[in-house]
Image (cartoon, rainbow, N blue to C red; front, side, top):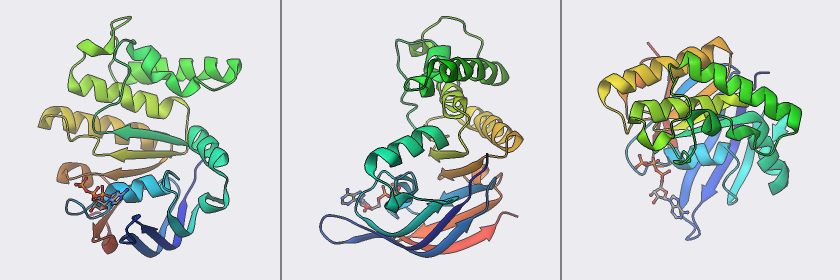
Length: 226
Ligand SMILES: Nc1ncnc2c1ncn2[C@@H]1O[C@H](COP(=O)(O)OP(=O)(O)OP(=O)(O)O)[C@@H](O)[C@H]1O
């Protein structure tokens, strides 16, 4: 399954009333890899949280396929996120005392037995593809690059249509960052998933299909990557 994103008249406000995001119209075709960049505090993470349905104080339309996030109840949004989205963050957010396989299979935590088995199998295949063959070792002894590859396997294990990444290469050195970018984009493209990645890393943006600049909560530039 692939899903595209359509946004119109989106506004996100802080409790003070300050507008954090103001996006008139934006469409992402299914299966596109999109980079988001902009100065610190511009609203990139807020944008990512908004399209993940994690922000309440928003108005407008944020539609994934036929599903309008604002029209859903909070539990329906959480279910949608669980079934359709994989999330990757800068600081990995792994369970330190678990193995790579157990971390990567976490999207199965709330799933039926049958789906859990499928997710475990997919997690193992993804870890193999990502070169993580560390058996029962717990991830607390993994390098940053290895940890982030476990996070990539976890994001993809539930076979979600959408992958959202916030600074996926920021904690890595250049070599590990480039490898992670190659691995992530390779897997995402192989399966036709939609990827949206916030990053300050020009090397990551150079691999994307489209790069969008956000400044002061607004889209200042939107172009197909060279
Ligand atoms: N819950 C909130 N209440 C008030 N202000 C907020 C809230 N969340 C974010 N902001 C503000 O919104 C602005 C955008 O924040 P955001 O984290 O989206 O920026 P960013 O572009 O991701 O920055 P960085 O590159 O530094 O991570 C910042 O000024 C931040 O302080």
